Length: 442
Image (cartoon, rainbow, N blue to C red; front, side):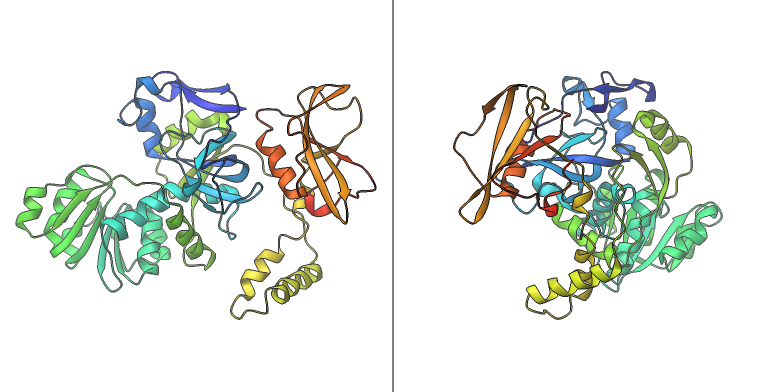
């Protein structure tokens, strides 16, 4: 598979696209087939050797901290996600995202918002979690309180404005003159042009300042915070001695992956309370250009790398979708208040059938090392087992005598596919017919 790695620290020129082995998940891990990966300032810090978590002993290192894609394999002990699920994740530092298949701890992963495609979804996890934890975990922002967000047009800032508004806070933000309308459209109550106005002269006292700028901006912010209020920064450590004299909490923090918080964010997105802005996209091979753009250009929102092309979603007949939604509603006992949930789930009808994941097995067609699932009837049920081809004319059964349900067989085969680029082959015997729900059989 392809990945962008660094073998030494330095400028964008040290980024190299390379062929490396596809990963396999350990216990409590999943492998994500990456459709898109976000580009963040922390990526440049890692590349430059200015992020202490990544040292020379970690080289070569795959950059990238957040991704969107689908589950390709699951390790032991993982529950709640299945192969094929569309997900997004903020990755721990030991796992990179600029690659075609990325490892994630299962607790870092959440279902991708239905309202977003993979490109836009990739822009959410790191920026979203950073904003969420800064405002609510560290800032302790409550409904009715007043918050000033410095840098409200950036990747973290534009989400922070919307999160704070969704939770009932009054929001001011500092932006450049070109972003005044943008920040207003996001819902900010007071938008301040930081070059034309001194924020400390035009904003009333605040319960929280969320600092995404640092430097002099941070220092000037302490004077406008109410006693017992807080200044929370993603950058430099605030002047705690001065903050103590003013009876203010002041802290710097580093965001941590959190799948539960991602689910809350996804819910706000699907409810239409939060929109995600992607400024531009680059191909994986253009990772160096993407990082340069993030540093040198004025970026509104996020920059995203397109990694693996996602198969287009098929058009679904509306009448079939309505019928499917009704069937789901009936099957679940006609619950109240979940009309949109059933409608979204009905949107999946037929989608799996477009995945060209499986090929019909014939003697001599499967290369050595290929995986074959053999399905047969056992009583009134369809059962299967997985085997591996030793050569084109002989079989080598991996799991002798172990039969299982079809979905379990698909998952087992996928988890043992390793880095093979061959499809999973399927052999149907004893009158077994292919079920379109399993996917597409070529």
